[in-house]
Image 1: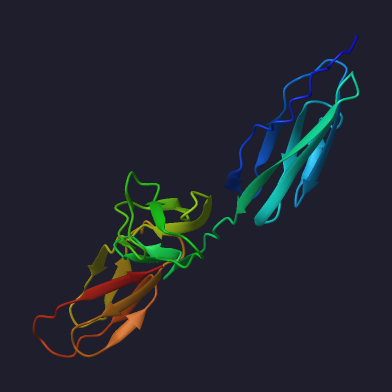
Image 2: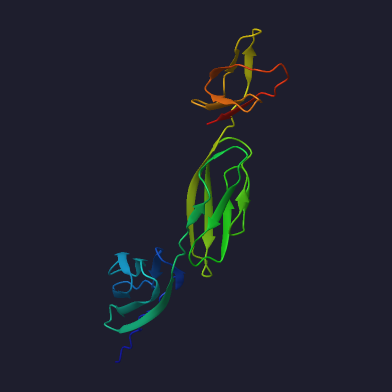
Length: 231
């Protein structure tokens, strides 16, 4: 009597084209009593050694191999291998023209990423863009987290973010008191900013600074008074 035993099935299933950093599960048909020996090049087995299923972490771009050698309970053996491609991730890099601005000032964003083929900007004010170097104008004061999402030709992704602080504009309001033949007193009213800088222009070529100031006009005529408030 001759007994012909079945050969084990070493076929490997699992992802063979992916991005750096992905953890991939590789699976072979379960065979009761069989011994599974896995060998990985360019990757690291995280779990499952000796079983029909393993988890592998891939941390370097390039190509790699998943090899499997099976010996079943009858002593029959077979092997197989699966070639994998580990694609590099792009590197998202943001540059901005400024990250601390006054309301009404536009911001120039620049995508200086490496190896990206498409991008999406999110400016955190319900608006965005897909161009490389958008100019954006925030419509209200606050701190906004602008995020750049990119992908390369392999579909691998990365993101980067930049906070932009949009400061409110000061309120330039003022009043004065006047007595004929004496200096005129000028005083700024409350501003929307803390520690603002005040500069007064008196319309006769003179100017002054400060929250309160006095000025003596030497001619009897009309003057255009201006107050500039800066944070």
